[in-house]
Image (cartoon, rainbow, N blue to C red; front, side, top):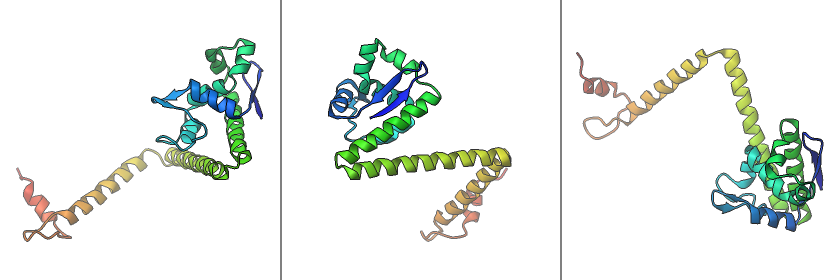
Length: 186
């Protein structure tokens, strides 16, 4: 069991067990499909990825897991979601994924635990790379975009030149003259 606090100071216990997983399955649909925590790689993108990237989805899943606690405290799903922001969302995220991994490990589903862990590492690495790229862009300035676009266009033209057939039906590695001939000159 993992615990996190919301912005009102209430503690919520995340206890993943078959009852909680069935409750999520019974209460949640995503794009018309049942949300099944036992199948973290179902869907496109996989459920574990969507839970990582979509905080609203994660909070809905957490509400389903914590629903008996919410009912005892008379906390609606809207109130539950409204109390998870900023630091609380990070704590809830960490508690959920620790509990999910622990559930799979205890259930002997080591492959699922390793795959969720690997997926989370890939997502985090991708996000870190994106942040580095944005930081680099801010440092280098907007000119880098124009330079990159110009290089991409140059590469595309070079690749296209290699694909233009010559008069005999073969492709030519230097067919710029064909492009020039096909463009009327004023």
